Every structure is written in C-alpha cells, then in structure tokens.
Image (cartoon, rainbow, N blue to C red; front, side, top):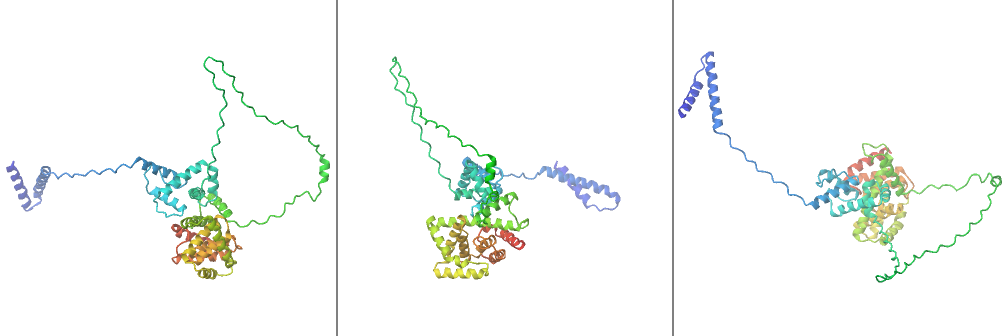
Length: 434
C-alpha cells in the first residue's frame, strides 16, 4: 500500500515538473490534474475535520405563577382603559412598557414604563369601580381630556362613597313552644296583620269652565309668556373642558401640529390637558406638605384677595411689566421663591378644582413671577376664553408666546414635560393660525 502511494506521488511530481512542449501534452496535463485531485480527496477522507461541539443554551428559569398572573391582570387593565399593552400573556414587552408610560403620563408621573405597586393597585381598583358604576365612569370620562384613559387618575382624586349599611334583619316569626311527644300541639300564633288607615272618600271634582269662557279671560297681552331675558352665562373652565372633551372624542382624538383642522379647538385641548396636569400636580404638592383643605381654602383666599388688584387688566401691558409688579410683592413678603412656588402650585389646583378663575389667575401670575415663566401659557388661555378677564385674543397670544419663548430659552416646562416638543409645535401653529 505504501509503495503504491509513493508511486502516485512520484507520478504527480514528474507530471507537474515536465515541460509543456506541445499541444499534444495537454492530455498528460489533464491526467496529472486528475491524479492530484484524487490524492487530495483521499487525504480529505483519511483526515476529516474535527467535529464542533455546541454548548446547549440554558433555558430561562420559570417565573412564579403569581407573578405571571399579576402581569396578565396589569395588561388586561391597561387594555381596558385604552392603553395598548398587546396580548394578555403575562410577559410584558416593549408594547406593554409603552402602555405603562402612557398611563403614567395621565397621572402626571415619570413616564419610564416601569410600573409601581401603587400604580398596579390603582389600575385594578379603577377597573373594578368602573364595572361597579358605569354611569359614574361615563360622567367622569366626559369631564376629562383623556376620556376613559383618565379614569384611574379621576378615581384617585375622587374616593368611592362608603357603602350603605346592610339592613337589619327582620325578627324571627314567633312560634309557640313545641308540646311533648304524644300531646296535642298548640295552635300556631296568627301573624299580626298591619292595620291600614281607612281610605277617605274622594273629594268632589269642581266643574270645568266652558272653553269659551276661558278663552275670553286671556288677553292679547297674556298670549305670549314672559320668562325674562337670558343673561349670558359666566365663563366656566369646567364647562369649556367638558365641551372640548366631547368634540375631541367625536373627532377621533386630539389635534396635532400636522393635522389641525380647527386651531381654536386645538388651543382648548391643550389648555384642558394642562389644567388636568396642574390640578393633579398641585394636589400632590398639598399632600406632600401636609396642607389641610381648611388651610388651603384660607391661605389661597388671602392670596387671591391680596394680588387680584395687580391683575386687574393684564391685557393693558406686556407680560413682563405685569409680572414685575407681582415679583415686588413676592420680594416684599420675605418668602423664598421655593415656598412661593409651592403656594402657587397648591392654589392653582384649588382654583381649577373649584372653578375659581380669579384664584387660578393669581396663582399663575405668582408662579410666572417666581421664575416659572412657562406657567404664563395658561394665563394666556384664560385671556382668550375670558376666565376672570375680558376676553382678549391678542393679549392671549402675547402671553402664550412669552411662555413658549421661556421654554425655548431653557426654562423647565410647566406641564407635561415629556410632551414639551409636541405641545410647543401645536401651540405655535395654533396661535399663528387662530
């Protein structure tokens, strides 16, 4: 065998080194190629490549059944309120995290997509409360710019009324004691029948006057009733946002900078959205500082009385001049800017909660004067709608532009920080077109 291999190698080498003299040698060259190819194939068969060993991938540890069920409940609740969490499979992914972030936005919380235990509980409680009282849910959704998405936040601020006590059971039916066996049983005690009062005889009906006589008694002056003149209704922030929510729902959603068929409605939508956020924010601040409702009512009422004169006509001067006067009052009070900002946020929420435009205006001006200029946007909405002022569209645009310029210059946004770019684009386009 070895001898045959040496002969094959020698033949291959001699053929490879032989000079190519003529075209007739092509046959020899072809044979040499076949021999070398056969040798390489044989070597490959005798020396196969080493086999590669793959390490099997370890399977992920199984999650506890309770944890999977909790995630399923969360996904179901998110889907119930219109937050698209995807399939209810108990395995949260990008879609579920996006739904959580959207839900957190309606609460005015950080939209990081990581749900907390309190937020889980709020979702479940809200879904149970909605099913328990659908009429209440429909009423609350109609008053919220988020619609049904805002129900958990609305429920969080509106505790459920305590259930009525269970009625006292009726006393047992009286029974005579049983006689000994073999003795005749005593007759059953008859059930006491209530005594109804006697029905009085019907009173005689007076005769109806003849139609001709009645017609003769009506004069031409009395033919058209007079209920008085209808006074124009006072501007109400609650009413505006209720109407805006209905229009937004019928339009299939809120206007965007790209799709804005009605600039006026787009401004109303952004105002109501900011109002909801500011209300939730101020209520949280009040809870954090431990302010009672009695204290809020007293102190915010004092602030409204003291500063209302400084806001008698904000349309008469540029925003900078009006806010400079408010700043003088703040500096003279000796209060820090931080404390003033806390007071402004609490009183703004109180003004919106009670539909008190004067209190909300004073709070907004205080915040804007205390180095929180973006709050001037909401004061611009108030000027546009006539909340506490005479409606003035031109002054409204000036205050909104003042707030947008502050945000563009780096000031922290007053509301919905995660939607700053989108809101700025919508407001800029709306005030230009409106």
